[in-house]
Length: 147
Length: 81
Figure 1 (cartoon, one colour):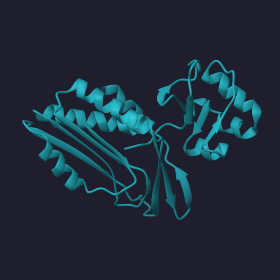
Figure 2 (spheres, chains in turn cyan, red):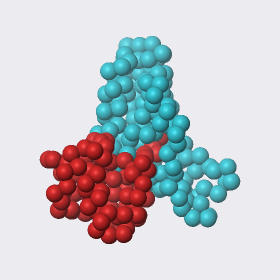
Figure 3 (tube, chains in turn red, green):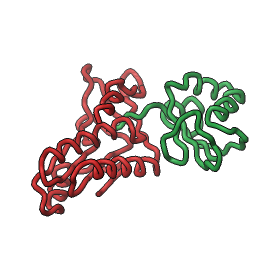
């Protein structure tokens, strides 16, 4: 298991290659990378991500351990950035390796659902009009109930 | 104990972290105590359904006892991913 919480930019392709090269005997690798999306109005200048140092790593670690307990996984990678990001920047990434694809896909979705609403990150959008905290969505909370 | 605030809770209260001397038995008691202290706390804590709390870096709830807790953090629902 590897968990990275960092302000620095990362290369999702290089991370995926490194992750895949590090697992052996696995039949499936699934990865998801999240990118800062431009707003519909096209006015997003930056996304500030705040987090709770210490708790962040701890919370992600517990989520990843839960995934490993529920699915047959060879390895798990979670990368999440904080600080000031601009549209198009990679913001986070999850990768799972498993003997079979079903475990890899499900565990990756589980990790994403939990990272959204159980890892202590908060997003603030800066537009020309000002800055506003992103509100949590009800769908993100209900997404957890399927697990 | 150390009390930490994040996101708009931090902005409303005006500090990211402070030491609080309290005999509050539960998180809810601490919230009442702080809210009575100054308007900025009352404002930040006006709607507890919009807040989450962590005790020693684990998510908890407002009924939880503070016995032995060293770090309390208040923040809005998380928006990671």
